[in-house]
Length: 105
Image 1: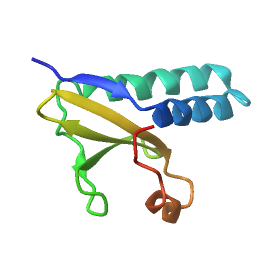
Image 2: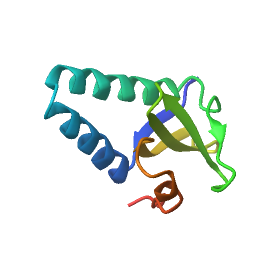
Image 3: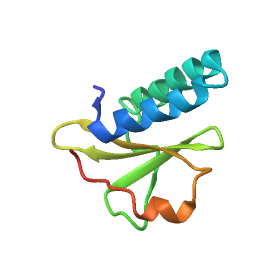
């Protein structure tokens, strides 16, 4: 039985921002990227532990989508739930990742 996958409000805003930025130059690529990120996130329903653990954030995991995008998430075993917490463009300042809010809103 698979896990349920949900997006935090912040993850939804992150995804919208990434897609909107890319759409300014290439709307078709933006749509493909948005769909691919969602597909990667939804695939965690079947393989919730495939992402690596974050040393700096106990309980959180990450998967990398292509070379530049990171999906940050956590797994709730008792509820069979995967919460996508953030979508992160890794081309941004890596030090900023440490300051990301990972609290559900």
